[in-house]
Image 1 (cartoon, rainbow, N blue to C red):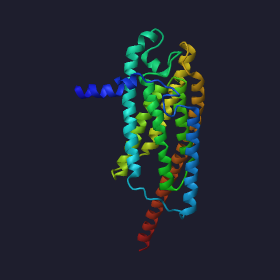
Image 2: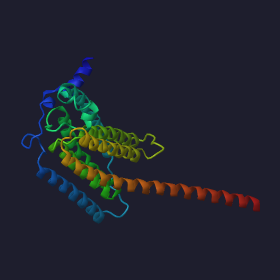
Image 3: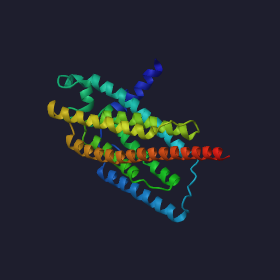
Image 4: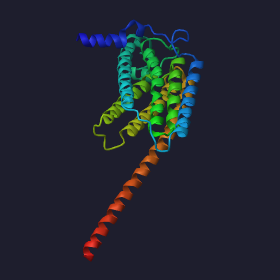
Length: 296
């Protein structure tokens, strides 16, 4: 029990967590200038690295990375799991302590989707939202690893990482509704996806289906359902905080969803074509072997 209380204290009851306040003067990386500069630097460095490797290395040559991708995946999995646990405990504590203020108009689940009007970015929940925002910059490092290992810069990856950092900044700046469930879903999926990458990186057996892609698809589907819930609560239950940022967030999520659906469909169709081609080749080989036996 002592261990549980200690974990609970450091994840939801520590004075730094309870007394957190999003401020441009007190929080590192909390200005618009920092956000735009860091995203621009990320995009330019990714393009520069891609072009540099294209000029210096022959086509098909990759840079040996050793255990670096596995270590990055392990770190991201642990950070995501910590944010998930901390935000879950913090949400329970916030609901317990502040429900007297909004319980007549909202249920706890509705509070997770729709912050009351006038909510300020302070307290436990926003501390973990800030940690999630900072983790997005470490998440960007995966682009560098992908360029070094595959010698290919994927537009969707760069766009998705940039949008993820931008949206998490909006959550804090405007105390946007829906961010609690969005962070819980995202960190849960990230902990599973990065843990799976560590699992396969050390040579263990991979899943018999595209695990990472399907996890991302489930995440986008959950986000879509929650966005509909926020919209209904805003119009039929007294309004939600940060709806201006939510509209922009929804637009960006829609763009990401369309890009990912395009990738998912192309991957599925290509997979079916490969399977059909392999089956046709096997049938042709069997027919040729049968004809040879008959001739003999």
